[in-house]
Length: 69
Image 1 (cartoon, rainbow, N blue to C red):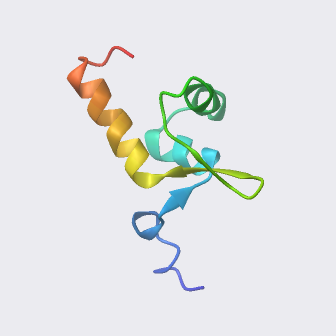
Image 2: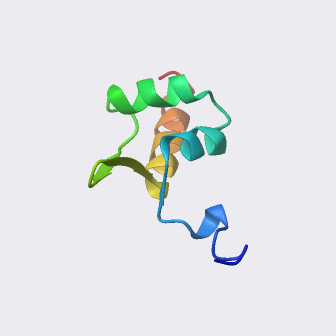
């Protein structure tokens, strides 16, 4: 895999840790957001993944609510 293929912008789904990194929040908070259903996640086999567009939707919701979530 080349660096270009592993660029975050090209990934369809992220690990919880990668999603937390993209939002610049802690891993524990990211797990809490997923558990509460505030950030959509999917299961792929035994793995939990966050669709990249789910992060966009979460940030859009925060903006609509004025940052209170």
